[in-house]
Image (cartoon, rainbow, N blue to C red; front, top):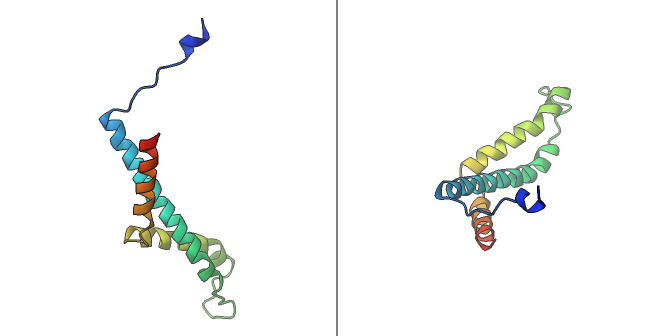
Length: 99
């Protein structure tokens, strides 16, 4: 067996593969925007100190607060976000077309 027989030829993506690639790119752009919003929200929730409050959640609140912030970020992104996903998606598609 020769080494050349192990190499498969490069095939151009079909129409269905192109649509799948665009869907993956869209999802990646939206996920990135949600992550960016999450990073912007984290400091806001870290400065909230209710340790002396009657409604202090203790260690459980500290463990679940990052998940709450993540869900808030995803909800914000799904409801319009900050417009970052559209720009990222266009840039990613342009980079894929160049390749």
